[in-house]
Length: 482
Image 1 (spheres, rainbow, N blue to C red):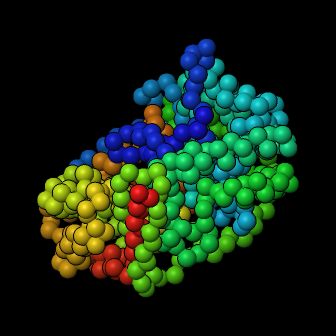
Image 2 (tube, helix red, strand yellow):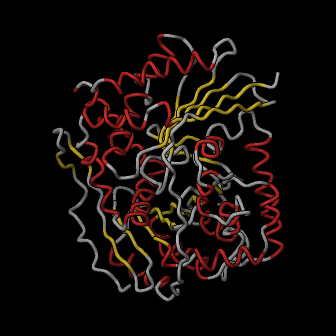
Image 3 (cartoon, one colour):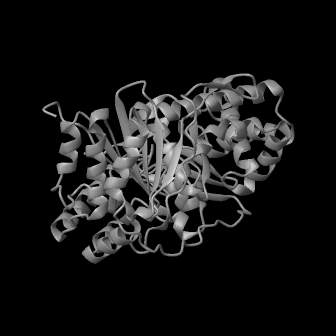
C-alpha cells in the first residue's frame, strides 16, 4: 500500500503526495506481525542549553563517521525508549532523474522492496514486521530514503538487511513490469482521478521553475514510466545506490561503539562507485509574474495558489524567509490567516510553506515558498491577490516590530521540535541525514536556532522586498469544469 506523510509541527499528517512526495509506505499488518574520519566527539547526554533569547534548547547528541568506502554514518543516542530509527539515505532524488524518464527515481524506490541478494520479494517488509517495527521509503527532490523503526534488540538485523539490498538488488523484468503498473495506478489514483490532484505540490514546480530539472513532472508521465527498461534500472542502481552516495543514520537506544561496529561489519566491504557530474539545477531570477489556469473536471470549488522563489539555502535571507513564513502564513495568528479568513472571509483556511514535500531544512536546491487556498466561486482571483498583497506589502514597506519577530522565532522553534519528534522521533534522523548528505555536517542540527536568532527586522524587510516582490511569483488558478 502506498501512502504519504508530512513531518509537521502538529505531528504526523496522512494524506496525498501533496504532503510529502512519492513515497512507498508499508504499514504493518495486524500482528502476526576516504579513510575513516575521526568521529565528532559525542556531547554529554542531551540537555537543555541557553539560547540567545534566554530560552532553553535541546541538544541532539551527534557522532559522525566516514568509512573507507565513503559511507557516511551518523549516530545519535537517545535512551529514553528502547527503540531505534534506522535510516539509509541516498543522494539521488527526482530532481536529477534522467530526462525522458520522469518518475524514474520514484519507480526505482518501489523496486527496492522487490527483493535483494538474501531476502526475497517483500521479505524485507516481513522481517521488519516480525520484529515489531514499521518501515517506509520516500523519494524527494534531492534524496531517496528508506527507514525502519524497531525495538533496540533488532538493530543489527536491520543493518544487515539494509546492507543486503545496497549490496545487490534483485531486479527482474517481471518485478519491473509489476511495479511500473503499481506506480501508474498510483499516479491515476493520487493525481489524474483525484479532485485537485497535484494541486499545488506537483503543479506549481512545473509552472514556476524554468530549469527542466526543477520543472518536470517528477511523479512521472505514463509514457515515460512505460519506457523504463531493465537496463535503465540496473544502471541507476549501480550508479546511485553506492556507499559513497549514501548515509546511514541511527537514532535511539543503542551503544555507539557496538552500533558503529555493526555498520562496519555489514557495509564496509561494499565498493565505492564513481559518481557522475551533478547537473546545473540553478534557476534564473524571475523578472515577471507568471499566471496559469487549470480546469479540473472533478473539483467542486475554485482553488488558488501563489508561489515565490526562495533565497539560496543557508543564506541570511533563507533564514529570514523561515521567519517570514511564520509571520505571514503559519498558524491562525499569521497575517494572511487573519486578513483572508478572519477579517475578509474570503476563504476558510490558507496554508503552505517552503518545500511542500518536506520542510525548509531537508532539500538542497532551488525551492518555492507556496501558499494555497480554496474559495467560493463569487470570490475572484483578483480579490484574493489584492488581499494577499495587502498583508505582504506591510512586511515589505516597514520592519516588523520586536514582539512579532520574537513570536515568529518561538513558532519556528516549536515547528522545528515538532519536525524532530515526527513519526516516533524519526524526524531527527531525517534532519541528521539531510545535513550529512548536503552539508557534510550533521551537527548543524544544533545550530538551526542560532541562525534564526541572527535574523533582524531589517533583514526580514530586505528579504521581503527582494523575494516577495510581485515579479518573483507564479499564480495558479484551478476552476471546476462546470
